[in-house]
Length: 80
Image 1 (cartoon, rainbow, N blue to C red):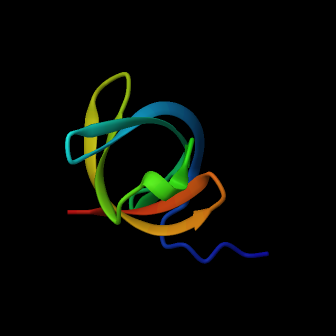
Image 2: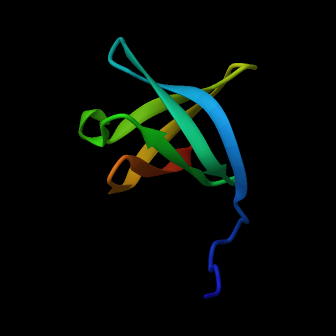
């Protein structure tokens, strides 16, 4: 099956945190591109529509919009 994304995804296994409203949840970034990422979380029902993704170990902060949920994996789009 052909991938129709504008930007290719890179497979990774990077620790990160999802931050919103004074809360921080641990997560793992599984793949990433210039426009978004797939992230594994413990419980996707706690993830709001918009949040900040803090990539570790060098803190890189990205504003994100939740696009899809599939069990404990979420897909996000990066916002400017």
